[in-house]
Amino acid sequence: MTNDMVKKPASPTIRLTAWSLVSLFVVIVAGSYVAKTEIVARGQGKAIPTGRVQIVQPQVDGKIMAILVGEGQSVKRGDVLLTMDATAAESDIARIQAGIERQVQEEAVASSILEPLVRKDPTDEGFIEAGKAALRRQKVGIQVEVDGTEELVIAVLAALRDEVAQTDAQLKRIDGAKSAQLARIEKNSFRPGNRLAEICLRGNTEEAGSDK
Image (cartoon, rainbow, N blue to C red; front, side, top):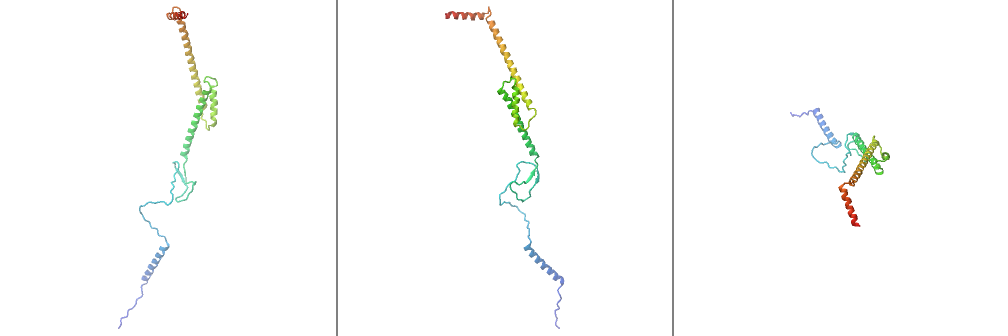
């Protein structure tokens, strides 16, 4: 009797598994051609730009209120990139402007005091009025007028006038005292019995006789 080999049918599970593996392999191969694969690599290096690098920085320091452009966005000259808090800058501008106005006021006051001193005698009646008129001419180009400027000019000119008047009066008193002292000396010098006067008169008489 001959032993015939009986063929058994293949298991459907094995067949299904084989087809699944083949299909997965085909999908992987096809996806490698179609899809982009991102590879993340870590390391140290240096980035060198291909174009010119422009450093963007503000001209003044301050607090950034809003950023108006995004990263990588193209911009051109004149575009507003961000807005900054202008409180500090406005305060500095106001302080500088106030300093300029104060210096202009001081210059006007000085000119209003010097002009009448050059053109008039401080003891004249129109000395203070000349200073006030000069101050009014100086105020034409002043934007903000400081209170009390005219009063300051009047007070300075009045003080100068009073000081000059006191000095003139003192000089007159000195001249008067000097004249009185000289007159007193001359009177005492030629009084009869004054030995010095007799010597002077005798000397003058001898000189007159020798001349004859």
